[in-house]
Image (cartoon, rainbow, N blue to C red; front, side, top):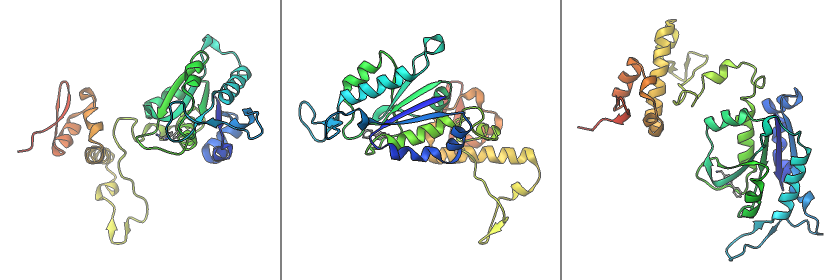
Length: 266
Ligand code: JAH
C-alpha cells in the first residue's frame, strides 16, 4: 500500500518510522511518503494561509499549495487497475467518525493520501476540486478539536497499517480484539497470580477452557453495558446465544427479534 501525508509539520510524522509501522515500511509492505506543504508555497515567506472571506477568527489554508502538492502526488502514482481513484482522507472535526469498519475498508485500498489541515481548515474549493481525481473522505477521530490533522493521521495510519497482511506478526491477535465483534475486550491478567493482596479471577486458573471462554464473554458484555451502552443497542440479535442473553438480562437488557432494548426499571 502507498500512503502519502501532506503537512506543514512533516517532523510530526517521524513517528511513522517507529515500531510496527516502521518495520512494515522497512519490509516493503508500506510505502509512506511525507510531503512538506510549504515546499509548494512560492513567495518569500512560504505563505500557506490567509484571512477568511466573510471575516471571523483565525486563518484558512490557501488553495494553491494544496492543489500543487496533490497534483504532484497524483501524477507520481501508478495509473491503477479498474481506474480506481486514490482515497484522500481529510482529518476534520466536521468529518464522519472513524471506526474499525473504516479501518478495514481503507486497508483494502492501494493508495491513501492524508491532507493535514491546520488553523481553521483548508479552503473548501480544494476539497471540491479534489473530487475530480480522488475519492475524498473528511474523517473525524471523535468530537474534540486538535490544532491540526497530524495526530489524527498518526492514529489512522496505525489503525489501517496494522490490518495489512504481514504487518502484524500474529494475525490471530487481529481477530480477538475490541470492536471486531462489536463488544469491548475482556480484562486480562498476568503473573504473579496474586499482587498487592489482589488475586486474579479464580476461573482463569481452572483449566476449564469452555468456562474461561464463557466468563470472558460475560465480562465483555458487562464492560460494554457499563461503558458503552450504545454498542449494546447496536448488537444483532442473531449473533447472541443463550449465555449472551442471560448476561444481558443481568445487565438490564432484553433481546427481541428486532434488537436489544433496556428493560424497564421496576
Ligand atoms: C483541527 C484541522 N477529531 C479529531 C480531529 C481531527 C482534525 C482536527 N481536529 C480534531 C483539525 C484543526 C485543523 C484539523
